[in-house]
Image (cartoon, rainbow over all chains, first blue to last red; front, top):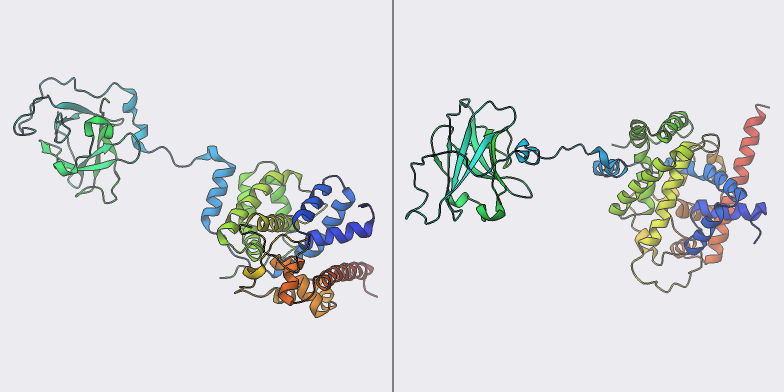
Length: 231
Length: 209
């Protein structure tokens, strides 16, 4: 076939642009286009003639997620959402974890009868921007009981509460309940996560929340104390 | 709420500038271009690729291609909306081939121009039919009078093919006409439009008599 013949080029280009040239024939034509300027010209002319017909097609705004996906795909390094706070805690760079705190007396026994193995003490240090103080959490050796206490009294606004979170190695933190800013709190046993001392919890953290705790199931206020569990 | 149909030549300058900026990597220009044209292109895609999820994926592909090819867009050779719509239509037509999951049905009207075996899904249409669209499109400048010159079966065949992406064989099935007849209707319709449009251009450039 001589694609330089204008009538043939016209006919093929017309069918290609109109959409009636399909399947293998269409693909063959597209392969030809690359090296035939005459065909390219004919195709452009037919596009100029026919595309304006689409002015009659009813426009429809695409859903927002199409743009969101497009943006992420074209410019992936533009990630707008910062890493969640539990991955950004400066804490991870510090040596944290098992207590270097000397005698910390817990008035409340962790279990009865007293466990044979010593409880694990986790110091929750003040995070960046907090002035001072720390909490200590005492976890029974079997991971089934947890008690917290501030080492120094913590001042807290009247309309705020402290909430304790278990931060897993992956995924979002899980609430363990509210803790007192002064005095000892015994956490409810049924709220403790499984495998607390065996890898289920990477860290414990305390956030400041409205009374009654976070309404969303995730920390909403600043994280003021955090302590890593040694794995 | 229906967004207004694009004004083909009027918007050309703005869109050409946006495309040029996209070619230089201007992301804000690209966002503006998407905002200005995506509803039109999505509408065009949906008529051909009726599966909505596929149409959404296609729209993404279209704009990825646009972003990559923007630097090569030549405003002297084509109008931006023509260029954009052509990209969209080509991807939509190609997607019909990929969407083919079921085995080829034996069709008496199959020919080698054709790759979609079953036109039944194209029949369910809750928007304006392709013929209606052709009638509405005739408001667009020279096309108007030229479409009037087509015979009704020519108009119907080219409308089905162009707007709904039906192949010759599918148009033949829909109109219950022989394949050869439909092919010749489409070809004659296209050639008639071409001749008529060329005459209009000559007439307009000649000025008032």
